[in-house]
Image (tube, rainbow, N blue to C red; front, side, top):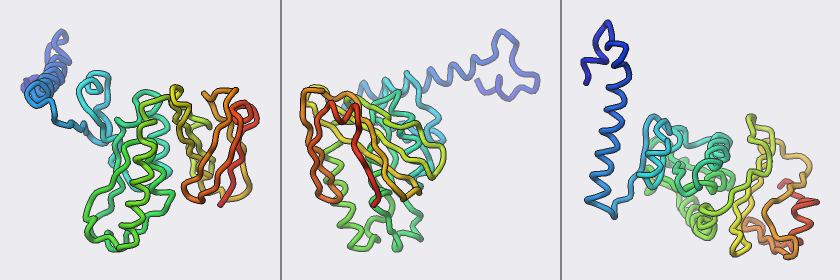
Length: 237
């Protein structure tokens, strides 16, 4: 069908777009062929950093590469907060990767790692070049992620408007209504002053919930009614 696209005068008016339609249909047929013959294969969809995420590919793929920019935590959170409105978090794959030349100076922060927890957390590149301290830190956060990832398939609540700058606070919540458990992430952006109360959603007003901070070890008990009406206070650091 390439002659339609390359023709200077273009295809006849009643044929325009047909080549592109056939191309997409052929793409779906190839993936269906692979799935039929290799049902145990995990399929990752990628096209120019998330440009081929639609309902038909969502039926066929297990995960999607949502962006080619996988370093800035603010950008990752922006993407994940938006796409979780449409697809469960386990479909959204990005991994923290640096060019090989920078691997020896690999210094991700807690913020970098936690920003990926709203999707399929991972990393790549020359992991063997990482300093031992960074390897240990990644293992710690990887273990933490494994405790939270099951909630990515449950209810999702963006607790604050989607931040379009680096200063605004950002918060999201994943909650399993059957087990009455989940996790909440709150980011202060670059505004490290003061505190803010975050109102949670989807809890049971008759329950008392225990919140456990994996970074500080602090524990807090709050009723569902209070968490959804008054909110929980978060502050730096």
